[in-house]
Image (cartoon, rainbow, N blue to C red):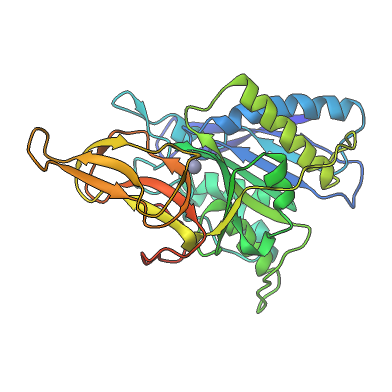
Length: 353
Ligand SMILES: [Zn+2]
């Protein structure tokens, strides 16, 4: 194993960032190469904990000669975000200077243009340098996993339709409760990787990418950082890598994936009709029926008729819920995975800003 730091020049004098990268060399040139990163949204730590334990397993595998394909791991992908303490609270999702989401605006390039990502890199801002370095590493691999988490959430993933159902092995290995099939229409990290593969040669656009995978995994909620969960997920990820031939492991066949599969159009984004205190009636993991009471919003405390009911538009599984108990008008409350498309109009791309 090789550990090295990528140095990112800061935007002001005297500042630079260090990005630790762990690399394992594979023994089989035909085996898939893997790139895994965590905490691109710097306050999402379940993936960092997972990778800590996965690296332990990979070091062991390396000493046993069990690494077949090259593996690159970045357990804390965003030192810039991690340093943003705003009035005592970590602000890891958006760059405070530009208000841009750390997981949006990745360069959409063809695979053949990969080297251009880091040419004259110093002319880019620190955040853009970071994005270019991460994408550059990922585009060396065939299996790319970007580990995030939700606010309060079940284990689930955003997977481009181009990788489905082949990617059901990952969903099974990580014991996911749901898979959201995305349309590949955003500039998130995972979709920038898939974009490069789809446009490998100029003028073409592939719709299926066998043997490859680029995915955003949502490892439950921000507070779900525990040793048992991290070890269980590391074990699951190792089994996935073994199944794809990236590492050698005892043959334990993966179970079939038994969770919910829903295209993004079938995700009901439940929003608060007015501001107020949120009183949830349903938790993540619960199945709800059309018309079920999901939450009461106390919009005018103490007033008769001061409550507003929020009900389920259709049957589905509550996959995520916000952790705040104060709603602004139109703020998100829940994501519910459903069998039918939502009647709300969804713009192409991601569910959230
Ligand atoms: Zn995230």
